[in-house]
Image 1 (cartoon, helix red, strand yellow):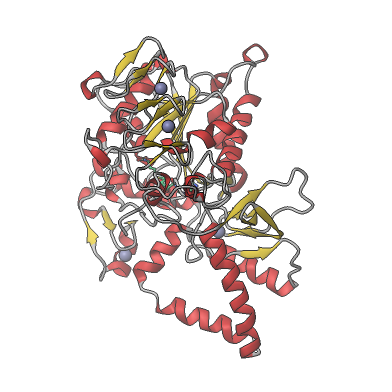
Image 2 (cartoon, rainbow, N blue to C red; image 1 turned 90 degrees about the vertical axis):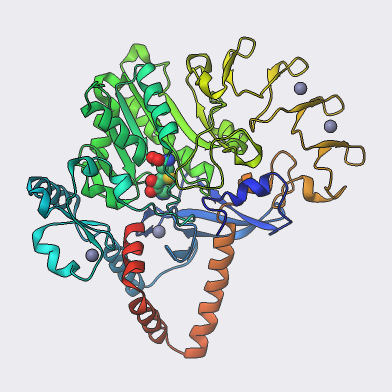
Length: 513
Ligand code: SAH
Ligand code: ZN
Ligand code: ZN
Ligand code: ZN
Ligand code: ZN
């Protein structure tokens, strides 16, 4: 797959890919929900509605908030579906079974034992992605086990663990040293003392490394992430197993309190939230979650600092600017290009498509955020922000208009700047790629037809494929049931398939849940 972490979206957003799909799915947040959402192994599910050519279908359904692939979580339930007691019990049992085998406290106990072992006894199983205590060795005899795990390695779990790249769930893309160093230096220059890292394990790690390094910085960090493997390396006060699409803490109230205490320390002074969510995820549930974290921070504020906002860095591709600003109008997008280690296709560079489309969205005034001049960024006094080398100030638009780092051109007919690859089309009466098909809906969104965004940033897209599949599967299940005349046969089928799965796959599945 050449296009992890929904990079495919990038291509589509730029109108290069052909026309695909004509329907999508939207999340609904009922203002006063009649019943609480049912639970999947990833916490409360979200309510979705299928949309066809801008028209909502009437029957709504619940599906997993975190996994955009049925393979990772196949929860599906019609909103008006009544489940039997037996099915509810089976679901409850399934949810239990999917939870990590060790509790958070057990993980911490293991970690404490592990660091007390002499170097020669500190082993890590690469297959199971697990630190091993001497009692575990036998069970992992046949696995790929590495020894002599040093303290330095323990402090860099993001290098020890392999990144979970399955793009529909974890989409784990780790910052390059360049980007990560830039972020840590920036956070320290801005004077922050606490960083809430939401889905940024490598940033968390680097902040902590600096805090324990020679030139001690005094920044504390708390990581919230769905990747449970990290709980082996951190105590309760520096990692919570968390789902950012539904604000669910897997370890219940105690973990929620860790987060609350962290946000409210020093009456909420000195804290910033930094998040780098999977791009394939829907923007709205993320915004709802971030607003809950903001509210949690606000509760701890003293009366006189009521006006202040929780500082945030939301790292996301530039073509989501419109969507993000719908939810956070005070955010602006910085020109800094964030790039990733395990992403070969889009790395920092000055040429063509090698430029990363990922940016930082923030409510911190952009003139306070100095971008590195060694990389060509410079200050635009008119815009009062740092911009990339080729981003030129357009006197007609009165701003530095490039979004993608290339020099954009002003079109007098469109009265705005456009991408260098676009030309004005007199048939469509706006600018487009030279080979576009005139008059077609291609220039608008394939899903809802709106002109202000493309399919990939459509509020209705992200789970469309999954849901189409889910609905199809549901229908198929019904017809299978009729064919087999029993539901039991089917569930047995399912288990035998599960048994056949390789150990690696199972480990993977458990890690993803
Ligand atoms: N660039 C970051 C990693 C971003 S990749 C860094 O280097 O630190 C996205 C991260 O979000 C991964 O760590 C992944 O495990 C996490 N993630 C994915 N889905 C999530 C969810 N539903 N809730 C919380 N974290 C999630
Ligand atoms: Zn789920
Ligand atoms: Zn093993
Ligand atoms: Zn212009
Ligand atoms: Zn034009």
